Image (tube, rainbow, N blue to C red; front, side, top):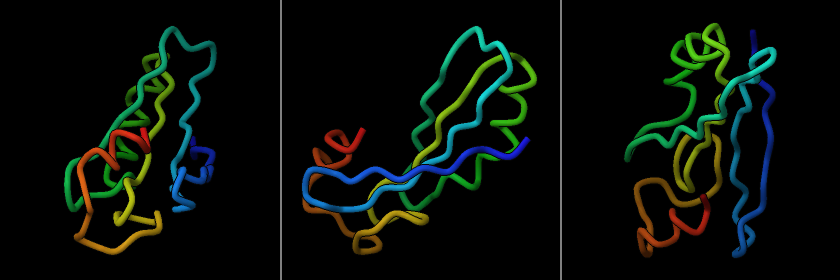
Length: 85
């Protein structure tokens, strides 16, 4: 099952992109945060596994990663990542 892509605008107007992988009649919702220099698409197979086990999952690209806006490989402060979540 393909996920539903979405976009949010951070407080500093940076566009952040994510995907909701919704399970039918979910028993839980998991928010998955990737590591540095990664992106949410790497976890599509894992999202399918969670869905098969009735767990919905949200994956997102941090600023400067994947399809989110922001300078690649640079961040002013790791607190920016926390604010985005």
